Image 1 (cartoon, helix red, strand yellow):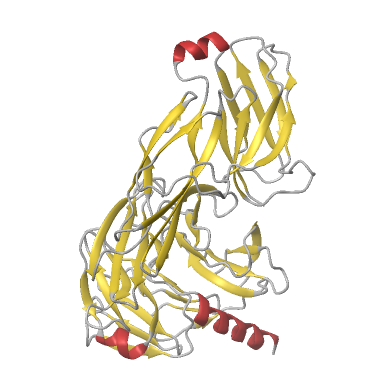
Image 2: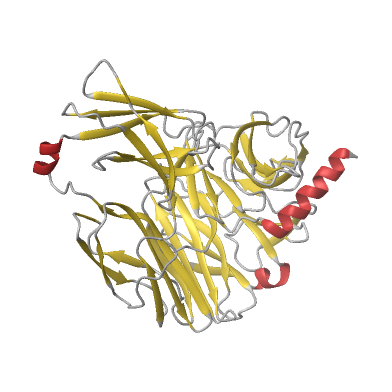
Length: 480
């Protein structure tokens, strides 16, 4: 009875919260994704691309309209594709998902699917898996799992799989599980300081042990190459703030795709963008394979220079889409609007790191974009000045860290740097830590346990360390 109740919980949460909208195909550059239909604002379609998302062909819109498709995954076999509906029906195509090629394979299959490791292998959440293209399924025990399921993925190594879930009554934590025996047994190997209702999605990379994780509420993209033991923050999509509907790893090292979909003005504006990366999500090339209606509305900007000496004059340029007619600029992220111009100039008189936010609107659509610690104002702007005051270098280990990080500072002059200041990504002060001199008169060391000035543990995320004379900084990642 307990297992039946757990399965019911998995089903109810998966249906209403999570589904896979984009999937890798078996060939390099081949992806399938769900997107808006060209013929009707209310329905979706299945698209296929063989050129990394540069172009895409709608292979079926009829099935997407009639079956309420919720999830889509590709098999390792060329041309094989699956989708599952909100009502647990699994369909299979052996002809690239083309309209009329779908066969009803099975019922009671959850929207959390995983496939593409071996031909004919399909995982039905953590509950069961098929080795014959979804015709029959082998049940799992999933011992050790608790709570409700957020997402599922299999590793490129056989028998290894992952899932992420939440526990009832724990509002600020999501749990990352691993299995070594196809979900017969699972164990928690990591925890994320995410709210339980935040949308998270995982997708494997090309090599064994590689996995990407996206938090769709905060737009933070993480990567691991050691089976989820440690995670590296790769990107935070805040300028513009992307409406990310799905991710999938590719068939090449470091490859990941993002599915970004804009649906605006009651569906009459419908655009799909594919963001493609070959460096594990640090940089992306953007393609626009589906364009229906006027340009989407979103805020975006850049600065002419981001590093300078006070008084530092910065020209900001509006790069927003959709013809914004109203702009609110906050040049130091203090909540106070500093300018209403489209392309303003601002002078920074103080040193430090400054986050910049742009809020814009057009008709009934409003949007914002923020670049954290974007502007760096320092008295040290060239090599000669740095040499006069001493070259300063910060380092920390491990990074990312969980319980404690060791911070070292080295300088070319014997001048006590005093302390390290810690800021969060919003530029807010977190803590100040005293540096201690080592036996080397040019080297100082300290430790940070992830606490703020009140001694309380701070949230998981990105933080910045700044030396006393503000001539050196470093980014670190805390994983709770």
